[in-house]
Image (cartoon, rainbow, N blue to C red; front, side):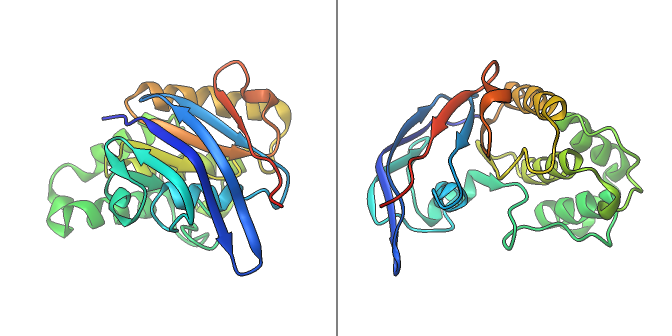
Length: 213
């Protein structure tokens, strides 16, 4: 079930100063938000905070009826985030999805129509590739969609994706945002960071981060 995301003055301060500061935003349940900002504005750190991987040092934030903190890890899932939830380039798409299913279902889930459920996971995000494809052979947008598929296996209320436009020409950025809109429509709130929000303007709510001072 999709969950509403709301922050009021959400801030994170580290040993070197503010990582992000005074982020106030509301994304309705089933919404799609594009978070943009220059390098150093704290885009990735904001996602990790929304996903319960980092603790905010100021402000408030809610995912559904849960206050930000470790408790939201049960309802918020991360896609591909460098250094946190990276894909293994030597594994296939099928192996990644099968491992994620094992994590949520246990190994006995392999006997419950695993092939069909792998297809369902890929179909939900619109990833049309041979499941035997190595991750290293995926295009950047395909890797993002695989990360989304893995995150959705646990049926979270909030899906968090990072740098979704990295390495993509504008036409493929537009297509990826349309697919993210369709993913949100399938019953999950999606918050994704990007460098350029323009390709998302017709399908997503734009949240701009100001450089921290």
